[in-house]
Image (cartoon, rainbow, N blue to C red):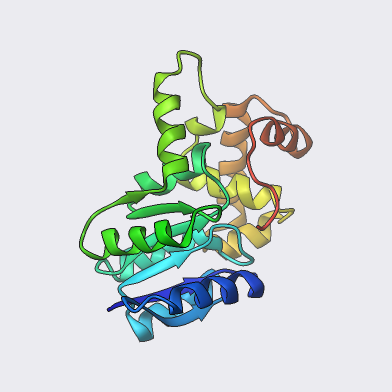
Length: 213
């Protein structure tokens, strides 16, 4: 039996996924959380085998929560469960050490397959993402400029696109507003934009999610 913690800020999504997982005798949903902060606390107390983690949530979000959980509990495996199948976010998360990446458009059988594979020490990419990564590797043209950003810079971009100011980002990432400003300046330089309006336009062009789905 694989013990799973489900993390998503949408109640209907949590309820639906939990219902589907509860129908499989090899998976036990040991808890649900609606934010990254809550997920960290529940991992501390429950020590699940796997965390199914959404990325875009209020507060610190799934990216930062995954990083902190991995640091505190290396034995706990993390599978990202989100809407994004391409772009810099999936690659950043895989590089950061998550063990699985599955989109919310996948079937329940594929999600179960991902959980089983990761629970025994493997890694899992959903079919949709694996195909897009393969096609991306064959492309000869330059990819998204967002792929040039560091993990922390991408976090700052995503939170900026959600409308958070410097102090809110600083509080979520536990860094100073001055440091956030430095990261944002680097982002502007790397992406060749001058302000948040241009940043948002560029994000829209390259399908970088702005909402909290």
